[in-house]
Image (tube, rainbow, N blue to C red):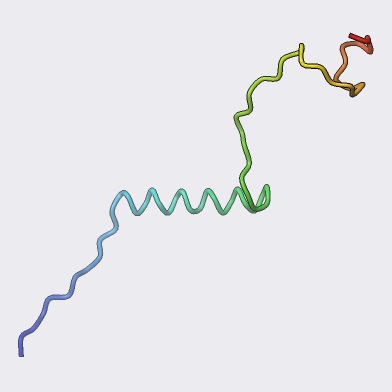
Amino acid sequence: MKKTKRRVAKATTMDAIKAMRRGGREAEQELLGPGFHSFDRAHKSKKIYTRKAKHKLNGENS
């Protein structure tokens, strides 16, 4: 019978990066809940019309 060599898996830098990403995703889901959460939103212009009083400038009707 031939003896076969057993392959030993080595931890690489890519494995470490994947583990850190996985841990970061799990931590984010614990804080914010499941699903996608955007962190970089486009700036909303003051010129955009909205009827809500909290968005109006100093209570003016403009």
